Image (tube, rainbow, N blue to C red; front, side):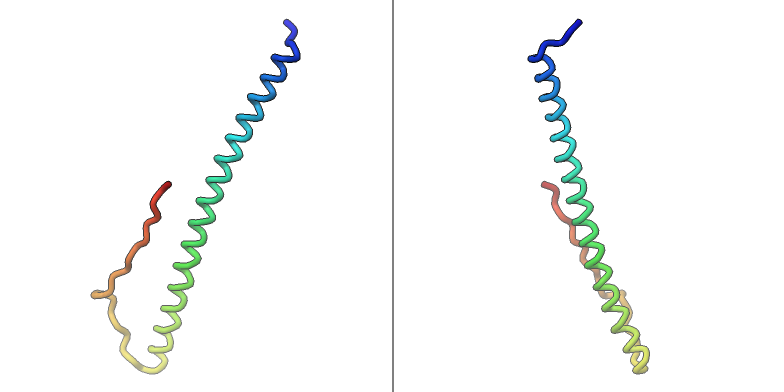
Length: 80
């Protein structure tokens, strides 16, 4: 059974449609990963800053404040 040029063209067009859809899905996934890495990087920087402050306080002989009253607010990004 031979395929006509029109059938081949339709098949190729459909294949490109699937490829485009897959590429868009991958792009979204990489975008989400990038956002998560940025968020983790920000958290890491904040923690390093806090550690530096605590080290300075320990060196100066100050008492270290407890974190009982301190709450950490978690930022949750809403999905589109």
